[in-house]
Each structure stands twice: as C-alpha cells, then as structure tokens.
Length: 85
Image 1: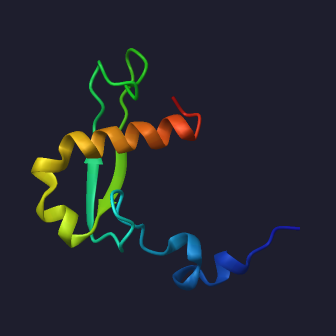
Image 2: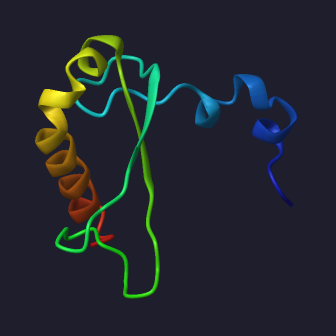
C-alpha cells in the first residue's frame, strides 16, 4: 500500500516547504541555477547538460556576485558528500 499522507495534503507536506539558503540555512527566497562548466567536478558527461537549482536568503542574495566561488564550492562539496560526484 502507498502512503498518501503527503499526496493528499501537498501544501503542508514538509517535502514541499521552502528550501533553505545554500550558504547560511535561513529560509531561501531567491531561486538560482548553477550550470557547471567543463572543468567543474560536477560537469555533466559529454553530450549532456546539467542544471543545479539552489536557493539563497535575502542577505546572501544581495552579496551573490561576490560569493559565486563560495556558492560553487558549496554545491560541489554537497554533491561529493552525497556521492553524486
């Protein structure tokens, strides 16, 4: 039998809640995309594409241009720790 508790109450399902800021963990309000380049450890296989979604809070979002290297390193670290790269 399939558990449908989340499916019947999707708006309140914890899995559908707002994602936290990638950098500080506060509620994420700015949705962003990361396109890993060919030299990135997160680069897709040849002939494929990869887009990674992440969120930033307002405070981190205001500084995102100066934080791009930190954001990229955090994404790659998270992917490594999860075994995806």
